[in-house]
Length: 185
Image (cartoon, rainbow, N blue to C red; front, side, top):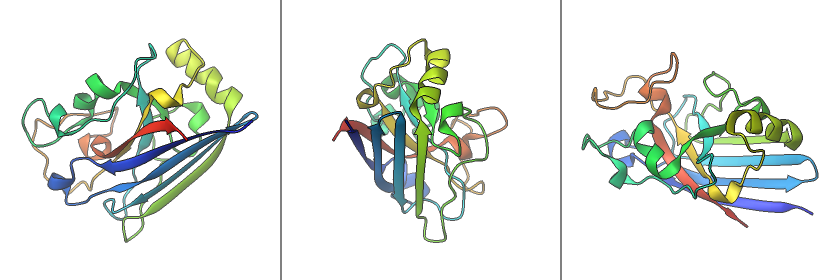
């Protein structure tokens, strides 16, 4: 039996970055496969966009961040400011989601119009095995997660207060530009 989930992805930080990134994400679980499809529009053009689902390892319901999460008043909701409502980064939507290798350069790149499409068919048993290693539970609980799309050009001037460094990647890579709540379809 196939189970479907969907997220309507809405802009975040749009006023500051000059793009109202939006789109949809669908997730279909059938047999031992998770099919992920993400369609994005009006993202910053010609750059890589990290995308993930975030959530709480304890199964607490994740919610989308809004400008209300701008705790330091700098006009940006950065990655650390999303954590109280959205939880931690869990599964990447890169070349190999089942590996759960988050900081890398294997994410989609938007075209000249700021559009990109992403589709992957992921072996569910591999993803659940690695998810359990990371979070002590193999249940993905998609309807308790949120999708984030990240990334702005490196030439955008960010205040020093904008945080979100992950390894060698700075806040330009990790700044959330869009978010959507995953719901059962």
